[in-house]
Image (tube, rainbow, N blue to C red; front, side, top):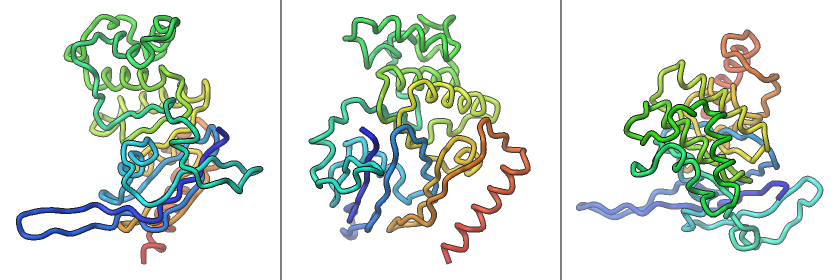
Length: 260
């Protein structure tokens, strides 16, 4: 797959409570493309539909009007058959806001879980265990690991199947600065090995600029794209660098002006 194009004509949530029933329009005429190997960050206010968008891409949410299609610059006209039927999404990983490790499995067993039927599962899991620096905790269970360690295990598990697409929903939220910094560096190291498509949700503009090739700035609902911006800073990116700070100021100003 060279990439894919997402078109969401309409997505609504139904609300029911004791007083009334209603619907909330989440997306209307939302469309964008993503290239093979691209690291895309979704940035926007709480409630604008970022997690919903990941759920749609993953196939967890199919209740929407639209389609996801294969796409490339050299083959832009495609049929509108849903990619979930024509192109298998079996090789997709999803890392959530919390690690969601299986408490009854050890560290190595959690990493190996999505590939346990593969012949080389042990080798892959042990290699990833080493890369995330948790060899000493190979046989420990999640309740014996710190929050940062659990995120490392979850990240290793997400990369274990060598996914074509990796979805990350604020995976470093609620961690202290030192740990989140180290996990961002680790994420980039693992991503550079095989360059899966990454779609990364964040509320932190510094994090988005540090990690992504490109940032989609989403509006409040019904969510639209305020700005689609390609980051041209060389990696590694230092948040204290003057070019980094200038870009952050520029993007903050640009998106604020578009909201008016």
